[in-house]
Image 1 (cartoon, rainbow, N blue to C red):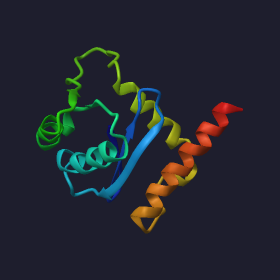
Image 2: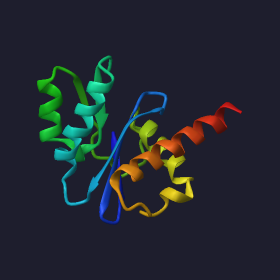
Image 3: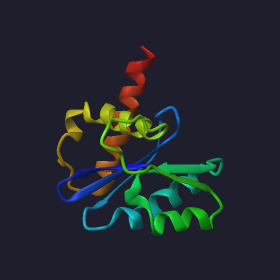
Image 4: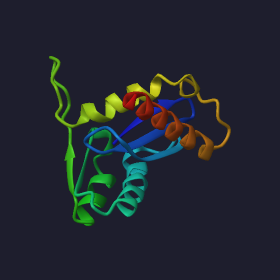
Length: 135
């Protein structure tokens, strides 16, 4: 799980280990990641009860970590990166998915007025990416 900052809004996505989009949530940028992460993971856990755990960056510590522990799932926070470049095992999967989404011109800026249409354009862009990979 990771967020992409857009002026005035934040985009949170949850992916599986293959980089497939499981859940997306867009909200106002004035909500802290650790608080918004609870809603994002709650929706993902409800939609996919087979999820055994989550991996996130340090912005999701605190409220999100206590929520995941309370529901009995595993939660792995990635540590702060040292001075040298280091591969973080599962975190790159979400970053790669965000990179695929950034290839869509419609997602380059916040063109959408409603949050629901912003979330749906993320889903449409991801479906388009998957269709391109199948061809």
